[in-house]
Amino acid sequence: MKILLTNDDGVISPGIQIISRMLADHGWLSAVVAPDRERSGMGHAITVDRPVRVHPLDPGMFASDVSAYSCDGTPTDCVTIGLEALSPQADFVVSGINQGPNMGDDVTYSGTVCAAMEGVILGRPSVAISLCLNRGDNFKHNTTAALVATAILSYVEKTGLPNNVLLNVNVPNELIRKIKGFRITKRGTRLYRDKFTYLKDPHGSDCYWLAGKIEDVFDEGTDVTAVREGYVSVTPVNMDMTDYAVLDEMLSEGVGNILAKSLNITAN
Image (tube, rainbow, N blue to C red):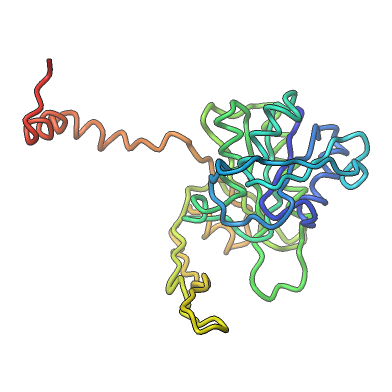
């Protein structure tokens, strides 16, 4: 297994520093390509309005004999450039360790998860891993998350992953001996109440600060519930977002023909 490692917190994040050394110790690390600064919340954004630049880093910053680069683009840019130009031999993508959870509805916003999605799109099995820090946490147990990642990767190396599927992993911010175990989960519900706070800037102009209050729904079998109860959450995420039940229903009802008739469209 040859892993391309990336994240959305930037190359100097403690998460990517710690997991890079552990992956290198296992002989798995092929290259590191990560944003040159914080890129959280970028989702699956790509850079199309300017050139994307990468800068080689001292390999000793991560692990000896491993190529490392900072990129001024998005996490998705990092994966695309990494797999297509800088480390095409990589056959697996790991994104993380994110400094914060990526559960429930976060997966659509998360640069961490969407970097793993890009790996899947480009034909590589991928894992996103996040450390579920809370505001005010004094310690960041990134070593715990890195150990969890190596356990999952050792399993996946033997079993593989289905096409179009990535694993989204969320780890409680605890010492490894305090982790209760692993749960295979579904994506839960994470709501953000009052997402924006209205402010005035120093010049008196209107502005808005994204600072919503998180309200998780603790349904059984979900990622948010597993982490709350002290378990590592492992959620398989399918890239095919088609709702097949609704698709079949719309086909059986002839919705396409109904819409065409409403516009007087007939097949030639």
